[in-house]
Length: 215
Image (cartoon, rainbow, N blue to C red; front, side, top):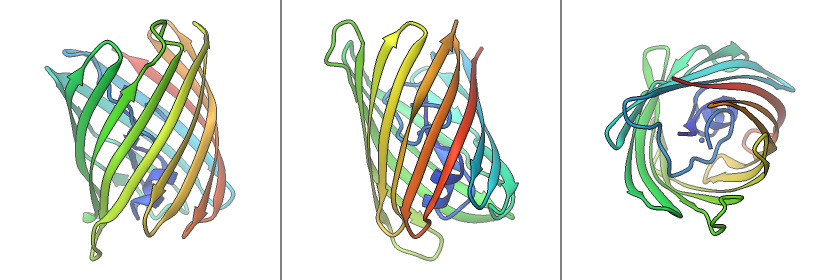
């Protein structure tokens, strides 16, 4: 699943109200994409101390390329936004996957920011119980220079019905964001329950409730 331009945390980090991140309401992206010829819909509600938002990320893949169109709206998030993006998987190995992603966020018919990054997933466990995700890239808010983007996350599959996730995303100029939670799969779909905190330009805490559907 794709994960990166998504909800308010990511949107705030990009100086906009949208997002990009292990799919759904998580921030750090992985090296995977939606299977070729298939689509997915990742949606979540975010309840912060000072804001509320509803987010949706439809995405479809054609060959090794995934196209996504994250949408976000809510209260005290600056209004609705849209963030078209593209993600090209360049490595699809048994234990290592790497993808290159780029896109832009728009709000009120204006470009708020652009971004580009490489996402890599490493699975040291042959049984796939552990997965480590790393994002390296940059964002560029409108009217400012490029800002470093670094992210890291870990996933541990407790059972076929539960995966635990933890991650940190650091953006120069915006601060650091932490998230942790649980993913509950059912078939090809899943539910996310996440708590998060940002420290820096935007100091906030939130809870995410997400639903991820595959087609």
